[in-house]
Image (tube, rainbow, N blue to C red; front, side, top):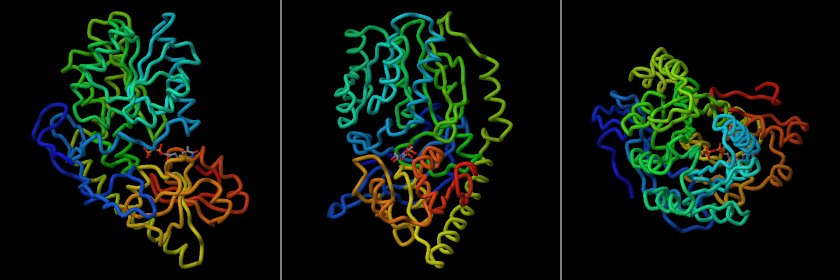
Length: 417
Ligand code: TYD
């Protein structure tokens, strides 16, 4: 069901040092049916640092079919992400300056990005292995091929649709074990003057802002610019620009082209600045990673202290956002339904199920109004503002919010964020 990592997936180095060890954890997106008799599996959750190219990576790879063939994460639930995609479409139009642009979205989820790009006049095509999500997109006439990204799929697209002007891969690169093969298949079909855009959570934020809960089995790699530049150079491509975006706790948007591309601007200074900043912050050295791990126990202690204090004084606590990261948070801190009564999530597939491992029940918004808890822990803290905007009734009746990252705190409204 899983394979151990013997060498760095980007540079091949065997100088891999383990710096984080969470023990056995369930798969973060494996929601459990309430009366299920099925055995729940735990897998080791450990992170290694490559001392050659500075890529952080999990020590194992769980079979992708187990994690991604049916997937309950819907990108379109978040208005913040919809706006993010719409802005990206405008940006890309400005960069490529051509009519009738063709964009291919790899791991297109429920078609959130395709929808926004289509509205702006792009020809769009998605590839998405989760059959439930591909079906949702196709039902909206956002053409989506229900497969993993692979050479045969790339060839099929080339024959049928021609070369994409842009290939986009948001929040999927971290899920891919064979990155070289992924990039080779992109290079194979990308237009000569086209651009490949990836978005990944920036590992600098993971380390500096204690975003440890973004570590779970789906996220095989935690990227800095240094290993990404190395990867693309190895594959005969060029990393032309890096931009930082606030989404998902801090993401980098990386622009990559074929080496020969004479049209797409090379923002060399910006790339160099990112590399220099990472180095200055110590992220190319192992020591910083051990310092990071040493801080995590504080979060665990602070959270358990706060929840214990609230419980002792008779307060009721629920959570919002049954995100994958929330699962790492609760399981690492040892929090289950003894502290948190239930979790609210708008995703239909997650409702009326139990969170993996800790088995806290998940419900739709109505449950919040029915049970009116005193405290709401925001497990999808990356969308704290949006979630607080949706739970004004909770705020009006004096309900408080617990935000766990970058450190545990209680707030009364979004202005305190
Ligand atoms: P997210 O933090 O995006 O990601 P991950 O699972 O990778 O950690 O997950 C957000 C979860 O919160 C997702 O299940 C959808 C849910 N959600 C809502 O129910 N309502 C909202 O308004 C938002 C923004 C998210």
